[in-house]
Length: 73
Image 1 (cartoon, rainbow, N blue to C red):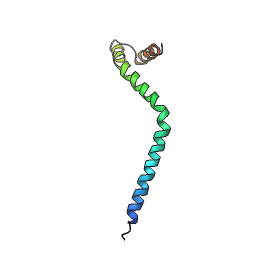
Image 2 (image 1 turned 30 degrees about the horizontal axis):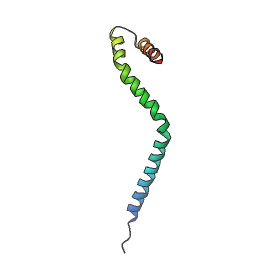
Image 3 (image 1 turned 90 degrees about the vertical axis):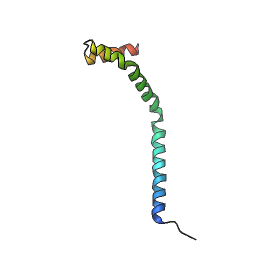
Image 4 (image 1 turned 180 degrees about the vertical axis):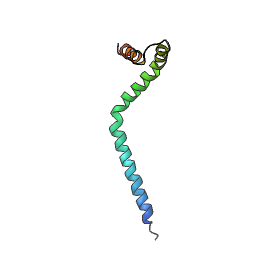
């Protein structure tokens, strides 16, 4: 009967540990995914209006504040 080398056993244990840690991180971040997806959606929707306002000479801060207020309403 052949034995499994200790180097292989350490590698398997390390991979299992990394998998468990990755799963726990993913599980704990799951409630925040809706916020991230919402932020990405707002970015995509408001990118062109922001460029239009800044090209017309609006201040970046004022244009961003205006668009944030508009999206809130």
